[in-house]
Amino acid sequence: MKVTLKAARVNSGLSQKEAAKRLGVAESTLYKWESGRNKPNTKYLGRIKKVFKIPIDYIIF
Image (cartoon, rainbow, N blue to C red; front, side, top):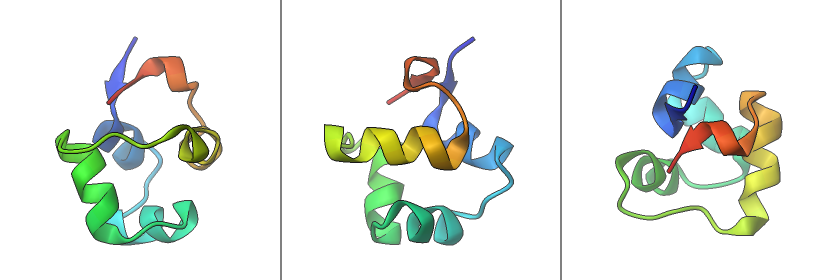
């Protein structure tokens, strides 16, 4: 089952601010990823997988 990046964050129990901090990005960057305005580059995919504890293949960007 695929979920949006925002849903993955919410399911992990993280606020946008806390998730951005754990990912090492600005809150505005995470907002853009969640809203579909931008996509994370490959540098951040491993971090997203680790922080949200979900395979990258299950996340809709």
